[in-house]
Image 1: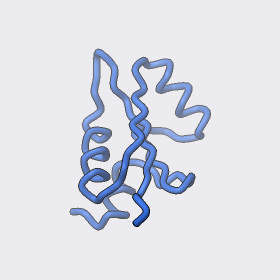
Image 2: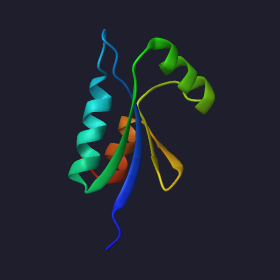
Image 3: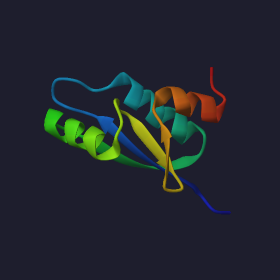
Image 4: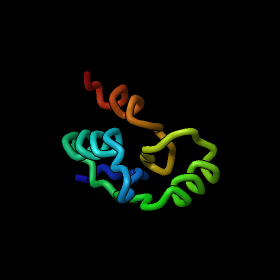
Length: 81
């Protein structure tokens, strides 16, 4: 059986750990995904990631090389409340 893979980019700085990133990580793991957890540890890393990806927020999740989106999209994808 092939394992499900996800890549998560989330903000984890000394000043702020994004609660939506933490929740996204937990939801993905609970759904059986192996998660490649990319922690953006500075504001400049976060800003560069958002600019490079053309997104307004983190976290962002990718499954099968395609951007799924942020926390709300993960909730929708996994059928969570």
